[in-house]
Amino acid sequence: MQEEDKQIQRIERSSLRGMRPVTPQPMRAQKLNMQNEYEEGGDTFSAMQNERMMSRDSMSIKSGFSFKKYIFFALIIILIVVVLLSTTFSKATVELELRTSELSNISKTFSATREPDKTGDLSFRITGPFEETKETVIEATHEEPTISKSTGIFTVYNANPKKQKVDLVARTRFKSSDGRLYRATKAFSIPAATGTGQLTPGAKDIEVVADEPGQNFNTTTTGDKYTLPGLAGSEQAEYVYGISKTPLTGGFVGKKYIVTKAQDSEARKSLREEIKIALQDKIVKNSLNSQQNDRMSVDNGGAITFVSLPDEQGERKINIKEKGTIRGISFSIADVASALSEEYVTGSDVQARSFLNQKLSIVAKPGQDIETAEKLSIGVSGSATLLWSVDTLLFVSDISGKNREEIEKLVKERHTQVVSVKKISIFPPWLSSVPSSRSKIKIVISNTNNIETTKNEKVEEKK
Image 1 (cartoon, rainbow, N blue to C red):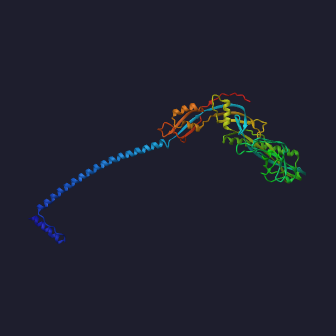
Image 2 (tube, rainbow, N blue to C red):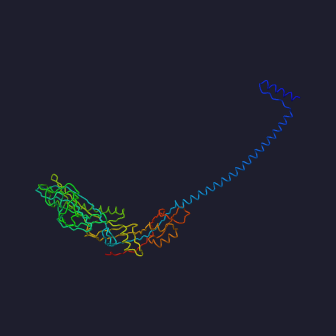
Image 3 (cartoon, one colour):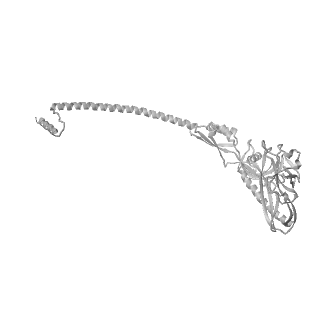
């Protein structure tokens, strides 16, 4: 009864606060409701537990499936990378040691023929011309009437397609477009034209002098064309002509300051000595430059051609000028190495084509006109280390797709100029053979100190 009274009091207080009244329930009914709620809650909890377990099992199944999928895709990617590295990105570097041979006390005279008509061991090419001009001023001794003729340099060309040299006599005439005549001071020969298809005319520089004295024969330009009246009506008239290389100067009629013959001779002799030294220096520099272009030049070049240029008048002073011209001779380094290996090295059917190092002197025997000669006598002396070469295109073609054992066997059979295969680097490293594609193979030449010595310590010059 006390419980019921307390419940009634609570209802009343709630009503007073404006709250919705709660309908009183008997105690037994409340207990039954609580029991039902507990039982329903237990079922809900059990259901939640079952749902969680099923969800965990489902996630476990999905997780196992995803892991296998990742492993599969990873293997596919690895396989693709391996295939790409083995094909697209594969490459190889092959390091070769080439044969060398050391020669000392070389002394040999070779016969060389003019390019491109090579018939012997050596062929030569004319280089230059190299020119040098020097001048000096001396005091004039007196003034006197003077009559002088214009002089200058012509380059005479021979463009005859029959490739025949042309010999012309001293005093050969050259005629300008306005009819003035000049004559060659000496007899000369013009080399034959060279080349195939578009010919390169043979050329020869000569000194000319006006046919008559006076200022009217002086010129101020170069590149003017002159015909040869003596060849008129002949086959050569069309192909032989002169081009002025320098202005024609010195023609004079009147009074001028002069020096004694002794003064003039001494001054010109001194100038020519200076020119000779300067030209020899140019020949040496040309030889060094030639070696950078796979060529070798003679040490001395040809004979120097001197021309006395017209004097220049000053106030009781005369400016004397001299000009010197020289041409050089060059050879292919491969030709020189091949000729020496054929002469001094035995037991090889393949000749050397280069030098590991060399201290050679190459000179043209004196008394030869190098500008017109078809053959020259060339002396070679000194020491050198020959270096054989390998045809890299042929070698790469031979070794493509082969392994190290096959490559070494091939070297012994076909490439005797190769001493050994020092190293083969293949990428990727799991490949045992070099790529089949030649563009993926790189050849490296390794020089060695293990030089094969050819005994020729005392070799007499062979004529």
